Amino acid sequence: MILKTNKKNYQLSIAICCLLLTSCHIYTFKDVSIPPEIKSIKINFIENKARYVNPQVSPQLTDALQQKITNQTRLNRTNNDDASYVISGQITGYDVTTVGVSNQGSTAAGFTNQLALTVHISLKNNVSNKTDEFDISQSAPFSGELSLSQAEGRLIPDLIKNTTDAIFNRIFTNW
Figure 1 (cartoon, rainbow, N blue to C red):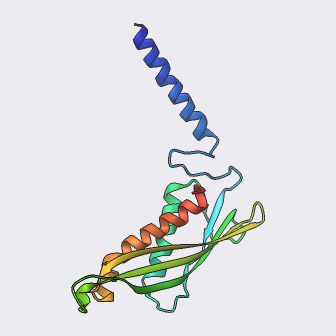
Figure 2: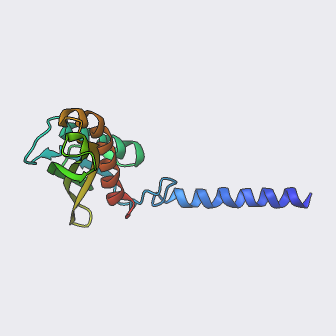
Figure 3: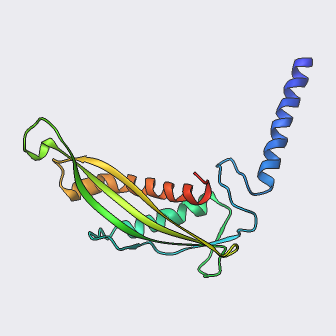
């Protein structure tokens, strides 16, 4: 009987703590930290200003960021410039570099390349009248045996996801 009572008290204490932490809208189980005065967000199209432009990357990145913020925060999306948060950005780098050579000689099979994506983000907080700017870079290696278009087909989905996660974490989780 004592064991059951302690277990029930423990479960009740956990439930109360969880309720208190989530009721103030500052903490959630997803570790998203949004001050209660922040109610809305505008997410502008992320333009591609890189030297090499893949026309798929900007719309995919913008859409992925919009979906992540909509699905994982309580913020209302709006198209008004007076939203609590206004996110703007541009792709500043989309580059392929050779990062390694193996012992297989001078053939393409002996090279390892890397596709890198860099995004500059501007977060305007209209409530506190402050702007935070930062860069996010993600990269992925691929075999020299692959053409750029083959590599892009395999790598872009992960680069978009990782870049979106990094932007989201920088804005909402203070990582």
